[in-house]
Image 1 (cartoon, rainbow, N blue to C red):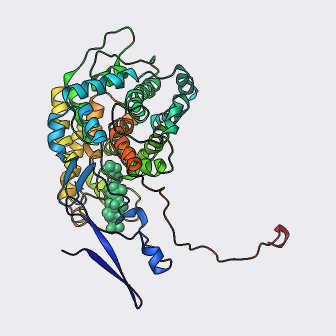
Image 2 (cartoon, helix red, strand yellow; image 1 turned 135 degrees about the vertical axis):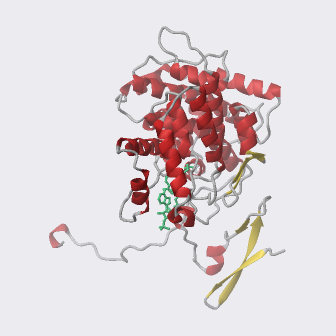
Image 3 (cartoon, rainbow, N blue to C red; image 1 turned 45 degrees about the vertical axis):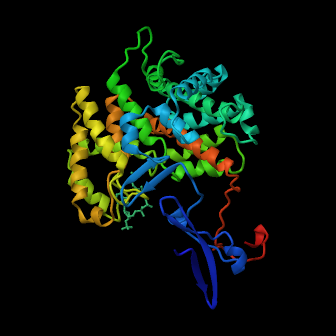
Amino acid sequence: MIDKAKLQIGENSYEFPLIVGTENEIAIDIKTLRGVTDGVITIDAGYKNTGACQSAITFLDGEKGILRYRGYSIEELAEKADFLEVAYLLIFGELPSKEELQKFHEDIKENSIVDEDVRKILDAFPKSAHPMGVLSSLTSALTAFNPSNDKINNIDYQRTKKSLYDNIVKVLGKIPVLVSWAYRKKLGLPLEYGDNSLGYVENILKMMFKKPNEDYVPNQVIITALNKLLILHADHEQNCSTSTVRIVGSSHAGLFASISSGISALWGPLHGGANQAVLEMLEAIREDGGDTKKYMAKAKDKNDPFRLMGFGHRVYKNFDPRAKIIKVAAYEVLNDLGIDDPILEIAKSLEKEALNDPYFVDRKLYPNVDFYSGIIYRAMGIPVEMFTVMFALGRLPGWIGHWCEMRLRKEPIGRPRQIYTGETQREFKNISQR
Ligand code: CMC
């Protein structure tokens, strides 16, 4: 078996060991590179070929379209699991027993009260504020109200230990409350707290949708759809936001602060913000007469900044397995709720055209997780600006799992190098001489 890689720089040759993962993925371990070569580094903008860590949480094969959490296929989890079971799996490594799941849920419920003073911060935001900005700020603010967060120096996954476990259940308990507050603030509704008699996902829906002076009536179609969407978004290995959470946490910043930065990273339209961008794009096409061919041409025109949102992925060069599941779910939800959304037809015809267009075929651009998710969120009655917030809610267990793994493995502070391309040394001139 090959176990070394050779590097030739001029006349000198160097050997580096290979690291092989459990799925036979191979990496060249270059941690000694600078030392042995007297200062040579690698450069890889966007980290397209750079492994930042070894991780036992999620396996993804973008060529074959495979996604597994802790060894379990995404298809099976989305079909059979409960979101909280998946959260437990991602964070602690194994599926919980009935008792373990019950205790986990109880602990989350016990830790779901958000300090009243956080409401005052929420009140200070204008109603027009984007809920992702509100959520990121309020998550960061939680650090001030839960100061033990920043004192984590003894990482332990054991559920009997204090500190880290407490912070994990606080994140999973309090952030859904913040999500519902961000939503209700947008609509000008009075804020809601959770209902301890409900399941985790149903409780989120109640906190979001309960109308003043009316009983909340659960809708099983919507509960099942949200459960599935949250599972599909729960982790995706070293994506932009998860890498952000790991790198912020690598300076030993606390869990809330790290997750707040993950929320900001997720916000961008090239990452989680794509679900909002997809729906806005589909709406724009509809308002423009539904001419999908016109927008396909724009997406292919290199002088036009327009991109087909919800298409393409850094790692999937095949169908995103999450997109396949969400497409089916979108049909089911619309059907079950008796909704006829013209936007679904536009999405379908864009997909069909793209899958047969050499531009997209040659570049292996397929629909990603965000292409159909917005259609389901819309059918659930969630406003478009909240779509990425829902993604963030689903991604919490992944961020927590990676943050814990990074600290448990005692990873060093994240600090890339660079190749400097600016001016060489020059003399300062007084302002009168410039
Ligand atoms: N529409 C048109 N052309 C595209 C698209 C698109 N959506 N995506 C990629 N391309 C082209 C791109 O112009 C480039 O062409 P060329 O080789 O001629 O220069 C080629 O395909 C490779 O693209 P890239 O931008 O170099 O690839 P990347 O890995 O850096 O970017 C991406 C991946 C997801 C940012 C990109 O595909 C994109 O912008 N997609 C639209 C936004 C989107 O849907 N994002 C959600 C991703 S899934 C949710 C998540 O996990 O974040």
